[in-house]
Length: 377
Ligand SMILES: NC(=O)c1ccc[n+]([C@@H]2O[C@H](COP(=O)([O-])OP(=O)(O)OC[C@H]3O[C@@H](n4cnc5c(N)ncnc54)[C@H](OP(=O)(O)O)[C@@H]3O)[C@@H](O)[C@H]2O)c1
Ligand SMILES: [Zn+2]
Image 1 (tube, rainbow, N blue to C red):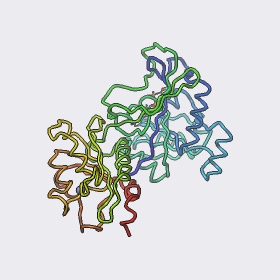
Image 2 (image 1 turned 120 degrees about the vertical axis):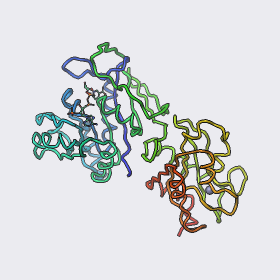
Image 3 (image 1 turned 90 degrees about the vertical axis):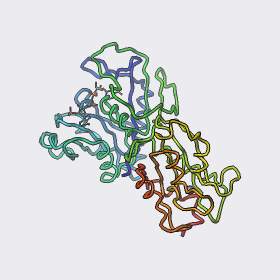
Image 4 (image 1 turned 180 degrees about the horizontal axis):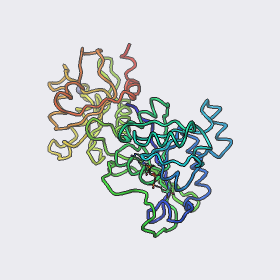
């Protein structure tokens, strides 16, 4: 189930609009920022926009710099990123610039939209139906697995950005604030109403670019249930990186763990053999730092680089048990426990049978193994 890294990119007016109501596209960014966007485009495998933006703006979505295109080719990548759009109606104008410039084109649609889209476009683009509805997770999985996309830039419009953020699927938001007002209630807004899954976003950068400001954010809130959210990847990577702090051992794994509340607040972190306790496990060390009565625990997610243990000689309670006792209902791990120290550990199975959403993201297994290379065959 790996997805590409999803980077949302947008420019807004001070009053939060993406455009005005006039027939031409409102230029919100500054020239130097358009060049920055060109650089981001050159760094991705694919660029996605909604069909509404094709109809409203008729964009080309090119990498304009010949040097950046040459660098892509020198790296063995196509000169231009793949261009992707989504439509439910299939209402696509075959004369739009989108189809006649840049790299390969791909349309994701529904069973209903597939025929009109294919009819309009012929061989200009690949048309993929995702079934009766367009499911964004299915789209991201298809882009990753079938088209080899590892980095996806999403350039709007508002309905697309809103869905990806509300579903917790955006890894990063690059937002440019332009110093002007639109003031037209009928103009498109960047973000629509609804419930957002991102929690309080983490501000990772602010940069002045001529008269605009670039702000970069990452969502922090864990996913819910078995479906992974983009923020799960961030926290699991953090857990894997914590494992590097473990005092070395020949007889136990090096593991890192983080406990995160539903709103994205970090509650605690820990790692194996932390603080001079030669047998403490990562999840145990992290949970011990949280008041057992903390009301955020039942909604929290435990991230652990290795799945929680089910049997251990060093302490009476294995970590899977400690997690259940803490009332945590969701666990995300990178690596299933191998038979190195105990056979058939299956912490994931134990948690699942206790009704916990136990999610394994195997794309982080290699990172989780890194500090344990000396223990593995
Ligand atoms: N300032 C900026 O950074 C920026 C960037 C991009 C766009 N814009 C502005 O944004 C405006 C357009 O935004 P918008 O929100 O109207 O359009 P949009 O998000 O580009 O496209 C919306 C369309 O995409 C398709 N779509 C979206 N979600 C879908 C789903 N889950 N399943 C199937 N189809 C789906 C639908 O196409 P069908 O209707 O064909 O079914 C929908 O009408 C324009 O005014 C443009 O200038 C500004
Ligand atoms: Zn343990």
